[in-house]
Image (cartoon, rainbow, N blue to C red; front, side, top):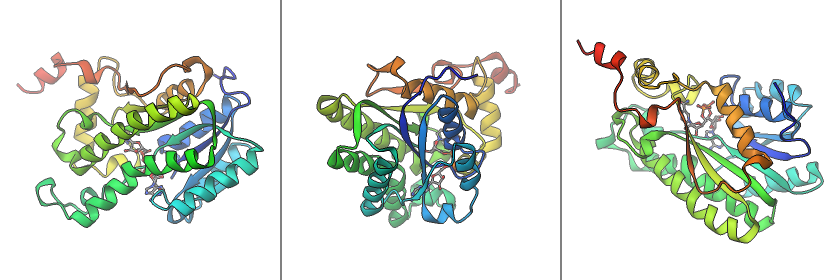
Amino acid sequence: MAYNLLKGKKGIIFGALDEKSIAWKTAQQCYNEGAQIVLTNAPVALRMGEINKLAEACGNAPVIGADVTNMDDLKALFEKSMEHFGGKVDFVLHSVGMGLNVRKGKDYTDLNYDWNHKTFDISSMSLHRVLKTAWDLDALNEHASVIALTYIAAQRVFPDYSEMADAKSLLESISRMFGYYYGVKRKVRINTISQSPTKTTAGSGVKGFENFMSYAEKMSPLGNAPAEDCANYISVMFSDLTRYVTMQNLFHDGGFSFTGVTPEVLESMG
Ligand SMILES: NC(=O)c1ccc[n+]([C@@H]2O[C@H](COP(=O)([O-])OP(=O)(O)OC[C@H]3O[C@@H](n4cnc5c(N)ncnc54)[C@H](O)[C@@H]3O)[C@@H](O)[C@H]2O)c1
């Protein structure tokens, strides 16, 4: 169902890799809600070609390659987007993450620090880079909304999430800190959404993911939140209905974050 929540708004969506991606569903939802969008991903991800299907389904949205660790790429992305839109940007989705040690099976107590740096650069500092690029170009409209996706391992220990827990803590801190500065400068709001485990390429990279999904399902009064519903929530956060929400970490997890234990989990212990 669409409510024209984003009619006339223009936004950049990072991170749609394939149709399982949270960014993919969000792009579709934003388009359905009346927004114009620009899609972006790392050049290597664009080579898969999947994103062109999404672009077509979103009113032939431009697809612009940008590695989030490269400031020149980000500058070109914002410049081209503003040129395409004929004006500034109203919303940005940061849906990017990559844990190199996780992917290569290196334990948390035995990190390769070169990979660890790269993990932070891609997964956390990239939000700072995106915001700094927008800041320098004055690319965001007043009350523009920026969302980055995160996970509860930033607050509580989930051992197999490893270095990505540290990356998400940093991401959430950057969102709060830049949220302050950008709020004062331009009334731009910046929030993170902490999503349930979701079967995507990035999600499935975590060790024991399937078991973990069913644990989280049993621990969430509403069940795990699907990616489509995350996209709905993001659309609301991009809309004018949430103009004074900023610097928050917003849980979209079916109640997982505030549940201590459930009968289903206890039963499985017997
Ligand atoms: N899937 C989950 O269980 C889950 C739960 C909570 C939060 N998240 C977060 O949601 C976000 C989106 O992940 P997803 O689950 O949709 O998986 P995904 O694999 O579909 O998306 C991750 C994206 O990051 C992009 N990316 C990686 N390196 C990049 C770079 N250098 N430059 C630009 N883009 C780059 C990838 O190409 C990909 O499109 C991530 O931040 C992830 O940590 C996921």
